[in-house]
Image 1 (cartoon, rainbow, N blue to C red):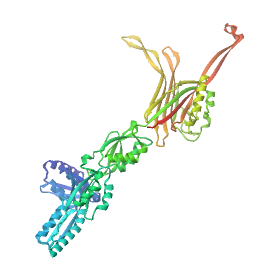
Image 2 (tube, rainbow, N blue to C red; image 1 turned 180 degrees about the vertical axis):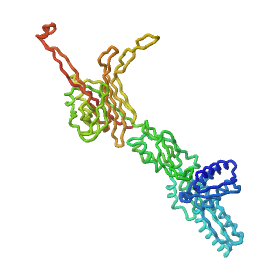
Image 3 (tube, rainbow, N blue to C red; image 1 turned 90 degrees about the vertical axis):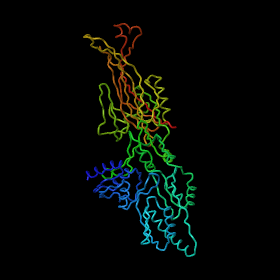
Image 4 (cartoon, helix red, strand yellow; image 1 turned 135 degrees about the vertical axis):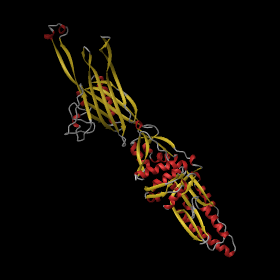
Length: 575
């Protein structure tokens, strides 16, 4: 079977230049594949009537052994399977079921027959066949099934009128019939048909052209003018006047994948399909090269950096998307303001701020890590799991949330403790970033250190620099429910013990993910450092004498636990 199909495809490409088939043979090939390939060879754009899907899926066995034109072969194959190609516009044909009609015209004279033929020429499609058998006095008509059904009643009624007119001596003239294409804008085909429904008659022939969002209507001149009047505000002169446009939709509270699935039912089939870094959405079945049904996919670009999608479609579709999904889209990328305070806080002050780590246990696990020095990772065990952003592991990451209404009191307390020296403010940055983009805040110093470089057999000193910085990296993602997911990375590097090669770097790192309500403040803690303070007390003057200071004075060494707390307040900026 594969060999036959390959031969067929080669044949089609060769005949597209000569326009004549010398010989052709198909065995068990999908009729859909044959029709589409021949249509391409004769340069016909085709629209498939959904009603003939079963016919096109049948396996065809076709043998042509004598030279025949491609166009003739195309029409013969359609006729063999009861189909017909009806033109709906220049270069565009609709493949649909064919219908046949036989009418006895034995009582009509030659003049009446000319009138009947004249009526038919105005009513049938350009692909129709009209044959008169003078011996059997029979009129044979072949056209689209829908048109034949309409013609049957019209012809019988008209012939009866002609015969009646002969009896009374009155000549009946048929009413002029025209065909017009109505190209629609800002309205769909179904909506347009509903507007026309009160005005159409049983003889009206309407053909849909979804590719161009158009209706092809055949009716009397008077009715066609009425249809123009009804649809006046929704019409354009040609498909070119209804050009697709491209627009970027910045999303909020929803992912690109979810948004594309939501808008798929209202997107037009004529919209341009763009590619590149895209999310794919299945849109229906299309025949493969071997006649097998394959999934046809439309591809919509997703601007991942901005949580946005790029849509190309007709203006009315774009407007409908804006109208129906206004709560999910924005003209500009959503932005998040991040206010941070990084503090070193004495252990007793942590409790005075209302933070009680030991009371924050529950049964939900959260991914996190803590590292210090050489990079030790402290995870969370299976037992005693924790709420999002909370940890009971000694030395692990702990988080605590302040609601929006409690922030003023919190800020007052922090300022008060800072004035009396119980809190050291390391940084208080504010930054604005686009939803889904990292915000990085960094401050500190570069420490020089020496390295040896061998050049020309001799060692030369070379000075390099190592960063010792406090760095906060926050990635905010606005969730569909309006909350904010924060992916937080905090790094604090400080100079350590001096060595001959240069100072060591003390490293502390925090990595965690938390979910915060818009405007709430999240507190991250768990990194504790012990600071030693040495003080001398005694009799003034004597404590300075080397030997007497031990008799008249004393030396006190106090250890104070200091915890690094990070206060982060994310806020969604509205337009």
